[in-house]
Image (cartoon, rainbow, N blue to C red; front, side, top):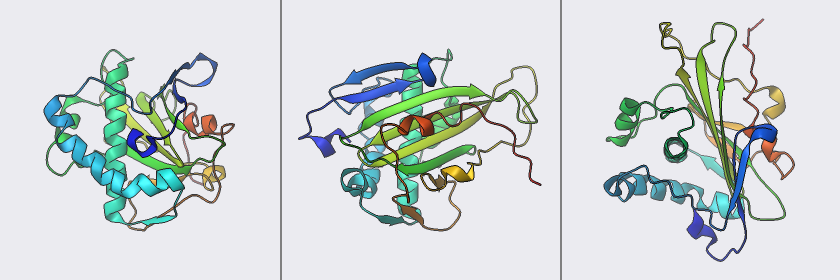
Length: 235
């Protein structure tokens, strides 16, 4: 991604956490180096995923070009986003161990690179007075309702005009047996103009950019929107 902006001289921002307690730092490069993968994987299948995603996203990132994403384009962005979330999570290791289980990571690294269940991805649009390079992440736990004891990892990645958000669920109790179902987020209608669902696919094309966009003042709102959730009960 950094090569897309090789001529840009500026500062990039990283934020981990939600609200005033979040850790923040800056970098002169949009590339974040996390030494958590071997050279063979980094220069092999992971590099291939990056190349496929770059072919889909480069004009979205640099120019905000309008696209109608079909299955191949949807899959390329989803695989890139999931891979980025896993790498950043492994590099941080705040919970004493990776959020994504080793068996799941191994399956993804093999042929097909299929995303596991319990993964949701959304796209948004950023517009501001300067190039925006940022990633933000946080963890949460559902404490009430039938989904209690599920843990959540949310990763929001912004580069150029494109915002990608990944949410993943994991069972968080070592004592209670994991239920057969996995929860999922249902975004409130207020988010629909600025956030479009990419994954899991529903068979329809994904249109981007969104009808409204995020700015420096609102980018944090979408990054932290899942920090406090409530069980949705249909009427």
